View 1 (cartoon, rainbow, N blue to C red):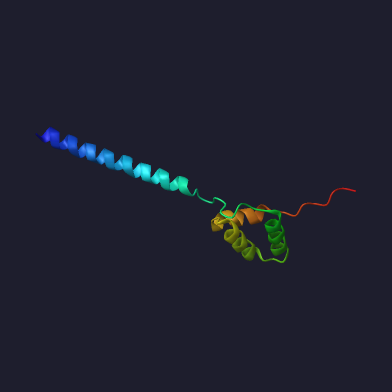
View 2: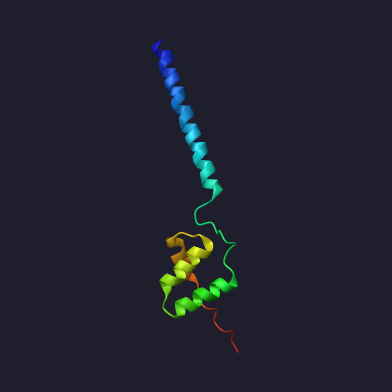
Amino acid sequence: MPNLIVTLLLTAVIAIVIIALIVLAVRMTQRPRNALVGGGIGPELIEQILQLKASDQFDQAVFLVRGETGMSHRAAARLVRKIHPTPPPPP
């Protein structure tokens, strides 16, 4: 009798853990972290970011990227830091 109770409890715990893992996997696939919401980063957005960086408005550039893409603050700041103006072609 005690073996039956232990077996039932162990089965219940394992079932709960499996269900929790499935729910977690479904939530993670619905919207991955830092997924682009608005269709990505176009040339217009890059130009706006460069203008804001040129006028020393880094925080505003990060805020713009977050609003347009849905990125986290950390990812948006990393992106703004990495965007640099393209150098002019050599003559």
